[in-house]
Amino acid sequence: MTTENPYDSFDADAVTRQEQQRDLVFPTLDAFVTQYLAPILRDRDVTGVGAWCPNWWKHPEVIARLGVLWRAFEYLRQDTGLGLSHWWLHHLDPHMTVLLHPVTGPFRNCRSGHGDGTDLPVVPAPAELLDIPAFSVHAEDPFAPWSEGGRP
Image (cartoon, rainbow, N blue to C red; front, side, top):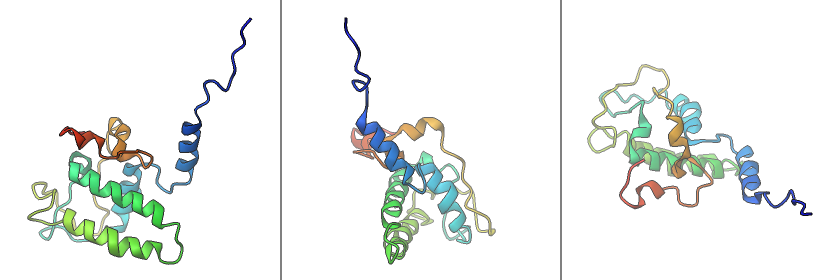
């Protein structure tokens, strides 16, 4: 007679990931962009000075840059002294300068316009993209979809 050990199927790594995810302010990249970035950047006038695309998740460079912004935010917010100041000055501002650049930025061909005092317009990322490593703070290689020249 064999008895199954209930711990044989126990996935300690999955439990650790779930515990870590509970510690996140924003559990996904999409949540970070829609619930935090879009509202805090609402007053940035990008009509004629820059560009923004509501479908930001269609741009690989944007996913990469916003992904590292999200990871840095989740890490640096834990430093209650200077963490978020460092994040704004050394992470958000430089990345947004590149992302919103009207000539060389990845949104240069997306002329949706913005600057009316409302949140940056965003369309939620499709559910299937949430499985891409770049959308997970726990991914070992967040840029795996592009490592072989592929696209998300």
